[in-house]
Length: 463
Ligand code: MN
Ligand code: MN
Image (tube, rainbow, N blue to C red; front, top):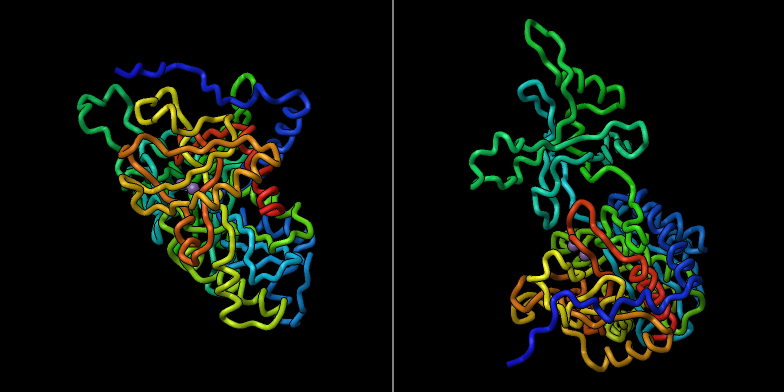
C-alpha cells in the first residue's frame, strides 16, 4: 500500500528561502506599487484609464490617431488601442515581420462584484436600499457585513459622463449589506444568502412628508445635488466593491490582501512587462480585457473581434494589409493567458492535491490545461510550446511551478486561453496562485507577483 504523503508538510517549493535581502527589497518595492494600483483601480474602466496614462507616459501612441493620420509604423514603435473604455491592446513593434507572429500576454481587468440594477433605488421599512445583480462567480455570503464602496459612471442623456467613486477616501461614507444576528437564527437549515438579498443599504434618515416618514426623497435630493436623477441609473454602470486599500498581510509581510487580485495582479505584472519592453524581435503585445468573469462575451470581452481588428490596423500601418498576413500573424503567435489560479489552502486541504496543485510563494504557476472533469473546455498547451517556455524560464532564473487547479473532478475553471487558441496560436495559462479567489478580499504572495512580472518580461523579449 502506498504511504500517504504527510498532510502538513511544508512545501519544499517555498522560494523565499532562495531570496537574499536585496531580492526581498526589490520584490517588496514592486509590490508596494502594485498595492497602490490595486487600491486605486477597482473597476475595468478605472484599470483602463490608469493603463492608458501609463502607456502614454511610456511612449505608446493611440492607434486611432495613427490611423487617422496614416502614420506608418516601424520597429520599436509603441502603440495602444482602446476598445470602449474597457479593453486595451498594447503593441511594441518588432524587428521581425509581424507575419511571423507576435508574443502576446493577455490578462483581464474585470473582477467579481455586485452591479446595480437599472432601477436600483427603493425604500423599505425606513431604509433606502440599492438593488444589485452580482457579476461573476461569487459565494454570496462573503459579500455581506463589510464596508462597501461604489464605483462607476452615470451617463446623462446628453452624453456627459459623471464618474462615481464613493467609499475610498478617509472621510467618505461607505455602504453595507446586512445579515441576521445569530440570536435570531433559530432555523440553521436555511442560512444561504440569496442573490436578491444582496441589496445595499444607503440611507436611514427619514423626514415627515404628508404625515409619513420618508427617506427616499432626501436621497433623491442628495443625488440631484450631484446632477444625478433617478432615471439616470438606467444609463449608469455602478459597481459595488469592498471599500478600502490593499494591505500587506502576515507578520512577515510576505503576502498582500486586496480586492481584485483576480486578475489585476496578472494584469499589473503584464502591464509593467510591456511598458519596459524595448525593441523586441517579435512584435510584443499586452492585452487587458473585460468580461472574463462572465465568459468573455460582449463587445469588450475576448470573444469580440477587437484584437483581430487592431492587429489588422497595425499590419496596415506596418506594410500593406491583406487578410492572409493577418491570419499568419495570429496563427504564428505565442500567447500567455496571464490569469490567477487556486493556491493550496491548508484550511481547505481536502479540495486540493498537495502534490500537483499550486502553492503560494512557489513562483508563477503554469496550467497546461484548465477546464473541468476530463479537461472539458480546456486549452491544452503542446509539449513543444512548453519546452520552449521552460528554456525562457530557466535562462531568466524565474521561480515557477507547473500545476493543476484542485483535485481531479473537484471543480474547474476557464480563462481567455481557449479563445486565442482558436487562431491556432500557441497558448498556455500562467499566473499568480491565490487564496480565496473571488472572495471580496483575496490573498497573493509578493514573490509570485514579482516572478510573474519577470516571466512576462522575459517572454516578450525571448520567445
Ligand atoms: Mn481570472
Ligand atoms: Mn475569476
